[in-house]
Image 1: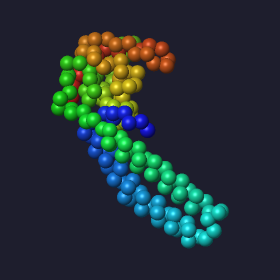
Image 2: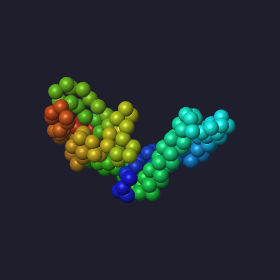
Image 3: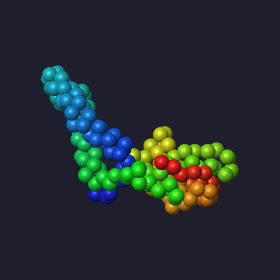
Image 4: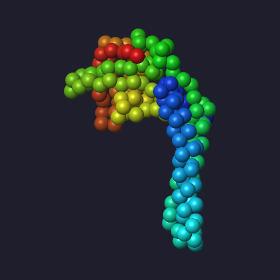
Length: 158
């Protein structure tokens, strides 16, 4: 993982810190217990429980290292300082698809905490990057794999 800046809201920072704490504590202990149990079965050369636990241990350690790097390179988006005059990182935005008339509410966040299911889209995504810098009332064309979608920005809020 590169040493690039990781943009996070306070909420995103807290989630990553909680995940790191869980992986270093409870998850490590759970995996160590599984390895200990698997070793009790004897011969480890044909012990699938042991192999699976060791793979999970390696994956856990990789994720811990990723989280530590992300947190070390984190820059916090202060939501109190978010400008609601234009779409910016940390801002929430209500948009309307001009063709289908469907409306969407999104928060623009850094890629590390993007979660489209929770309406948190990355500033690097096609929609997120197209909206950045635009004002309420403006229309924005978004290039997506299926073509072009036109959105109207209805409001920008915190």
